Image 1 (tube, one colour):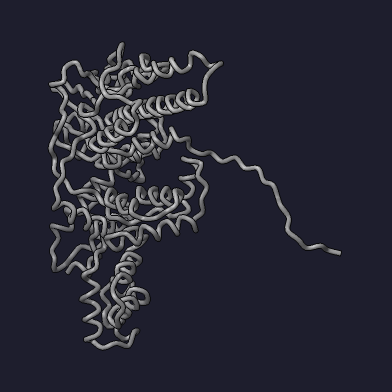
Image 2 (spheres, helix red, strand yellow; image 1 turned 120 degrees about the vertical axis):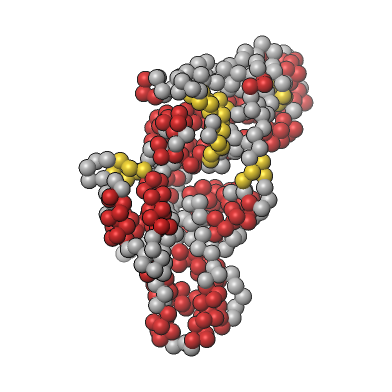
Length: 489
C-alpha cells in the first residue's frame, strides 16, 4: 500500500554571499568623485568614531606616477608604496590618499565641465523611491548597470543571471530577473529597459490613456511591426481592415514615440547643467611620458578617533569587575571604531582599485594618451582591462560607469575608451568605433536620391581597408540608428 504525505528533504548547498565590508567597498566603487565626497561627509556625521584630518604619525603615501609608460616593459605603469596593511590602532592607519599632497597647488581640485546627468543616475534615483525588498533592489540595480547608453537592455536575462552567480555568488532565475526588469520598465521615460525596439514602442503606447486610437497603435506594433518599419502602409491597412484616416492618425502618433529613451533623457537632463569633477588626471609630456593621479584633493583625510580608543582602553582595563553598563559601553565603542576602520579601508580599497583600473586602460590605449588621436584607439572590452588590472569584469564595469578622466586633450567618460573589435579573414583586428565612423560618413555623403545599399556600403568600406561582410555592415548601420536604403530616400 502506498502512503501519501509530506516529506522534508535536507539539501546542502554552498552559496557565496557578500560580507557587509564587501558590499560597502562595491557601493563606494560605484560613486564618482563628487558623490564620494558627499558620502564621506555623511559617514563622518553619522559615526563619532570617524574623524577628518591627519592622524598622529600618519605617513604620506605617494600615488602619482611620473614614469614613462611608453618605455616601461609591456607599456605598464609602475607604482610605489601602494600595499595596504593591517591596522591595529588608529596610529597605524597610513594616509589613504593616493597622490602627493605636499604640493596642493599641483592638484586640480575642481575642473568645471558641463554635461547632462546620465540616465543611469536618474534611474537609480527612481529606484530609491520604490518600496522594494533588498533583493529586488540589488537585481534592479544590476539591470540598470547593464543597460546600453540608449536605455535598452541588449543582454539576455539568462546571461545576466549567470553573471550574478559567477561574480557575486547570487543565485537567481531568468523569471526573477524578468520581474526586476518590469520594475525598471515602469520608470520614466517610458521605454527604458526594453529588449527590442518593438518592446520599447509597446511600453510607450501602454502608458497612454485608453482609447480606440491607443488600441489601434498597439495592433499595428503587435501585429504589423515588420510592415511598419518597412513603411508598407497599404499592407497594414489591408491586414487590419482600417481606413486611410484611421491609419494616418495612428501613424502620426507612432512616429512621435522615442526609439532611444536613454538618449532622450540625457537631452532633457542636459538642460540642467551640472559640474563634473574628473576622477582621474592623466598628463602627457613632450617626451611621451604619461603620468596618472587620482583627483581626490577634495576628499578629506580620515582616521579613527583617538578619544574613542582611549575610552575603550579605560573601560577594558578592569575586565573582571566590569559592570553591565561598562560592557555595553565597550560594545558601543568597539562597534563604532570597527565601523570607522572598515569605512577607511573601503575608501582605500576604492582608490587602489580605481588607480589599477585606470592604469590598465592607459596601458591598453597608450597611443591615444600620447597623441590624442581618436583613430589610435584600439578595440578594448571590459575583459581586457580586467585581465591586466587583475580584477573582476564587474569591477571594471563599476569603475568605468559615471567616471571621467581629464587628459591633455579634454575630459572623457571612461566608457569612451571601450569598443568592440572586428577581426578580418586575414586576422587583422579593426576597431568597431572606426568602422562605424567611416560608415556614418559614407551615408552622410551619399546621393539621397539613390541611397547606398548595404552591399554597396560593404564594397566602399572594403576599398577603404575595412573588409567586412554585408550582414556586419547591416548590424553596425542599425547600431548607428541608420535605416535601410529605401527608407533614406
